[in-house]
Length: 423
RNA sequence: GGUAGGGUACCGAAGUGGCCAACCGGGGCAGACUGUAAAUCUGCUGGCUAACGCCUUCCUUGGUUCGAAUCCAAGCCCUACCA
Image: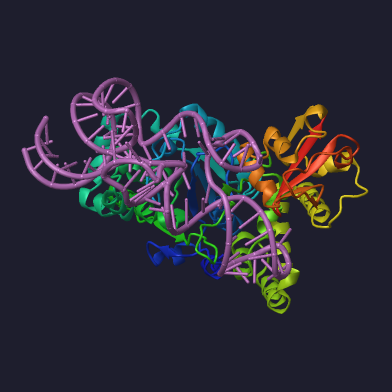
C-alpha cells in the first residue's frame, strides 16, 4: 500500500498534491473522495481518469467516497469553462444520480457486503436545507476575498469578455464545504480531482484547516489529452458515454480501437489495470509492428469488457469483424439486426425506399439532417449501401439493395453506420 | 444610475446602404493517401433544386429608402469603467 503514490506516478495519474506529508499519510488507510458532475445520466470517457484513480485507491485498501454534485451541479463549475452553464433542474439531477452509480459500479465496489465498500453521496442532501444565512455565518467567514479572487478559474473568467456571475463565483465555497462535510461525517482526509480542480480542492483543504485545525490533503491528476492536444473522450464531437443506450458497444469499442499510436501506451497505463510489465510488452509490439494495432486492441478489449461485460465485448468484436471484413454477403437479416442492435436506425415504408434516389431516402430516414446534406454526402462518394460505395445522385434503391427484402446497411464515410428497415 | 463599447451562421471574426446566403480562421462532414493511426492535400458546410435559380437569415420590434446586416427610433441582453 505504501507505493500507491508510485503507482499513480507511473500511470500518469499524478500531477500535484497539497503537501508532501500525503505520501506518509497514504501508508495507513485513508478515506478519499472525488466528485462527479451530474450533468448527464451517464458518465463519459472523460470521467475515466477520476474513476480509475478511485479504483486504484480502493484496491489499495482505502475507503472511497464518490460524491455526486447534485447541489453543485445546480450551480455549475466555472473551472475550465469559458461560459456560464445552463442550470439543471433538481429532478434532472435526481435522475442522473441513478445512472452514474450504475456506471461507477463497473469499476468501484459499492456492495455493502464487501470488506471495503465504497459509498456514494449526493451533496444536495446536505445543501438542500442550508439557508443563505447559514452559509454566510458558518462558512462564508472562513473564506477570504483575496484568495477567492486570485483563483485561476476566477481570474480567467473575470478577464474574459463574458465575465462571471456571483453564482459561479460561489462554486468554490460549495465544493470547499463538501470536503469539510465529508471530513466531519466520514473522516475523509483526501480529495482527488483533475488538475483543473486544484482551486476548488484547496478551497476545501483550507476550509477544513481553518475550522478544525486538521490538515487534510488534495491530490490532482493531469487532464488527459491526445497527442494533438485535444481533450480526451470525444469522438467526432460527441462524448463517449458509459451507458450503452447512449454509446453502443460497437462505438465504445471502436473509440478505443482508433487510438493513435502516440497515445495508446499512455492510455493503457491510465485506463486499465494491466500490469506495467504487460504494457511494456505492448509498447514493444507497437514499435515493431504499428499496423497490427495490437495495443489498441488490448485497450479496447479491456475497457469494453469492464464497462459492458464479456457479452458487450463480444457484440462489439463481432460487429467490427463484419464491418471491416468487407462484404456482407451471406449474412442473414437477423444477424445484421443483432450486430447493429445499437446503431441508429429508421424504418420507412417500402414504397418510400424502392426506386427512390438514395439521397432522398437517407434524408427521409434521418441519417442526414437535410436533403442538402444528404445530397452532399452522395455526390462526394461518402455513402455506402451494404458496404458497397453508392456514387452519383441518380443512385436509386433497387430490390437487390434490401437484404431479405427488408434491410439495408448504410454507411457514411468509413465509420458511421445506419440501419434502414423497409416495411 | 452615468459613460463608453458591443450583440453577424456551430464558434471566433470581417462586412458599416445595392457587387451579401454574407471575406477569412477554427470546428464539423466527406474524398485522396494510409494501418479503422497521425500528418498532408482536395471538396462541401442556411433551406429547396440535377442545375439556372428561388426562399428564409445578420438580437427584437417598428421606421427611413426603389433597395438595409449596414441608416433612424424604441426595447432586450452582454462587457468595461465610474457612481
